[in-house]
Each structure stands twice: as structure tokens, then as C-alpha cells.
Length: 428
Image 1 (cartoon, helix red, strand yellow):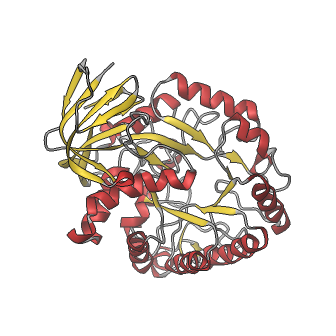
Image 2: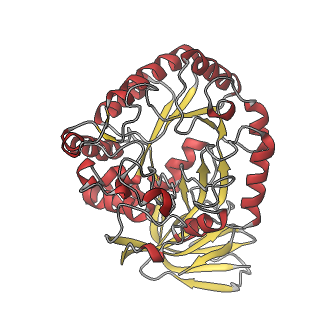
């Protein structure tokens, strides 16, 4: 199908484009931007008047819950959520059941995802067998099966020697290791940020030093091995200071933050709202403000949804017993726009900066060619209305996980059309 997206404002940070232009799509690829190609006759036109035409979003952390946790969510439901959120490429952690530590499991997941003809799915392979932190997986075989990096998800490696061997292996083959910095002992059993709020509510705490101590170890091992590491979901001001110093030193490190942590703090737990139970926990206002500033100065590379659908049976419980996590795919874009609107002035091109954090910056971390609107590249496109206001309603969310701390909030910015590989995968 030949598509024309007309009258929209095209914003493509990777190519420095921010102008009113028409986009022409032919045979699943972008044929031209601006000037109509010779002999082009559109089969369908999309009127994007008043809307932004941007690359499809790239999400660095979206749990699809398959295989093994279909009672929480299915590929069908979460792919539809991705489409409604404008996410055309997503990276899924390996903490499924069974864990993604065998090539056959990775191939099955990719086949299932491809058959739905929606978002492009890029799995992370398990760093250790069963995520148990003892023996390394066959990273080379998992890479051949389609893994784009290796992760422990939320399971820390207790034995530092194992992590050293993993980084040596990864460096040998130039793989990226994805780690969420958390000490395996500090904060065990903790369910909220260590601070006055947790103390008043009588909740066991997770101290900031559980993140910073882990970062010190990771950076020392990086210096010894030269391995490339992506740090997942940074949460504290002290941790971000360490990342800033490591980048200044020249270590090959990147990092992301979850969209929830840009706006919420431990105060938002309120009276034990289990929707605000997160991993890592929502931290103090100082930490939240440091995250916002780190996004602004580039210390934090990417905003991710940290999409973790949880079913009612595991969420509608007392705070300490509820499973951590929240749905995020459909909220990723408006939460990023909200950050840009609140934290950047007009001279910093807030709209373009927010889109970059969700597209080209994310793609460059993973080493993918998506996240841009280059002529000849795959036509993965998100068309959204930056002024549209909508209220977060559980019934309207496509994700099977209906729980988010933003229920009832009014959002600004809504996806209208999502195009994947040149076909219209979603139209509101």
C-alpha cells in the first residue's frame, strides 16, 4: 500500500527535521519527505493537520508476560497497548516463565510476536541460567536466536565473580549487558524508599545505597573489562551523580529511567496505594528532581515505560503484599511530553527533545536502525495530537494490566495513528 501523511508537522530528531511536510510511504518504507516522488499515487491519505508526525517510539523495557504469565497479560493485549501508545519497537526483559535462557524460547517469542504484525519485539536474553546468578548462558547462541543484549531483570547477581565473567564474555563478543543496579543484600524485603514517608507508614525501606553500592561495583568491573553496560531504571540523585562521573571518565555506559519516576515520589504512595508500588521504589522529591535534570543534561539517555502489567489478584492487596509494577505503554508519550513541558524552556525545543528520548536516543542505546524517518528506512511512524487531553481510565487501556498510579489523571498528548512497516496498525 502507498500511503501519504499530509499537513503534519514532521519532527525527526535523528535527522534534524522539524517542519511542516508530507510523508510518502511505499512498499513498507519511507519513499520521500516533502517532495512527492515521481509517479507516486497514494492508495490512502492520512490528514495530520495540527498533529505531529514522528518516528515510532522505541521502548527499552516492556514486559509482555509471555511465556508463562498469560493470566497477567498476553502478547495480543500488550501489542495492542503498544500500538495505542505509538510504540513500534520494544525490548522485553528475560524474566518470563520459563526464563529466556534458551535459543528455542527466544525464537518462539519472536515468531509469536511477528505473527501479530504489530510492534517489533527485541528480547533480552538471560545473563545467567534461570536468572539464578550461578552459570552464564550461551550468549552467542542467544544472539543468533535474536537477543539484542543480556539482562538479569530484577534478579541481582550475588557472586561478583560471576558478574565479572559475564562482562568479560560480553566484551569478547561486543555484547551489551543490561543491569539494574541493586545490592543483593541491602533492602531485601524492602517495599518503599527509605525515608520519613516509609517510617510514618511503617513500611520496610529500600535505601539509596542499595543502588549506589551496586553502581560502584559495576563501574569497577567495567574498568577491568571494558564491557559496555546499560543501566536500567535509575532512581536516585546519588546514583545519577555516579553515572555522570562515569560518563565523564569515558566508561561505555548508558542509562534509562522509568516514566513513572520522572513525575512521582514516595509521597504519592498516599494511604498505601498499591498502584504506586514500584521496583525500584518511588523515591524522594530530591531524587525525582535530579532525574528530571539528568534527562535535561543528557546524563540519563532514555525514558522507558517500565511496562509491567499486573492482574487484580496480585495488585488489589495491602501495599506490602501487592506485586510491584504498573502498565505504562499507553502513558509513555504523554508522560515524556509532560516532562519536557515542565522542565525545558522553549529555546531547548521541548517537543523535539521529548521525542528524541523516546526514539533516536533509545535506538542508539540498543544499536537499532529504527527511531528515525530516513528515506529508505522502514516506515514505523507515530502520528499524535500534542494538544489532545484525555483522562486515564482503566477500561480504556488496551493493556490487560489496568493498574497505574496515574488512574484518573488528565494527560496531554494522544496517539492518533500508528504505522508499522508501512501498514496502519492502529487508528483512533
